[in-house]
Length: 62
Ligand code: SF4
Image 1 (spheres, protein in one colour):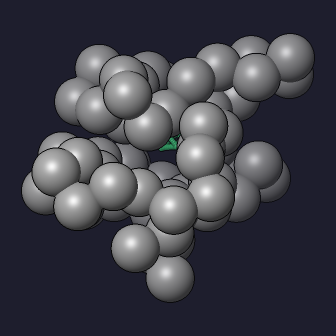
Image 2: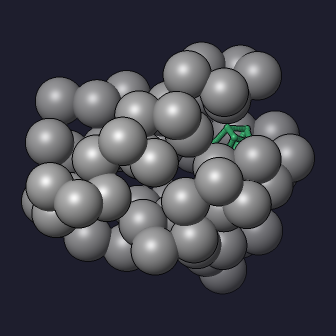
């Protein structure tokens, strides 16, 4: 599983970082971005929750 944050859609609410801090972090533009190319299996559930909880659907899993 891979996750990507659409920087145009991210409104910097912090939900994904609260839910899954091992995968998402703030970047230099104060938007969320993914820390890794491939999400480890043990973090997939958390990452999916973040994808589903993003209010602007800015995160896609591929
Ligand atoms: S949950 Fe969505 S809008 Fe909020 S910080 Fe994460 S990517 Fe941005």
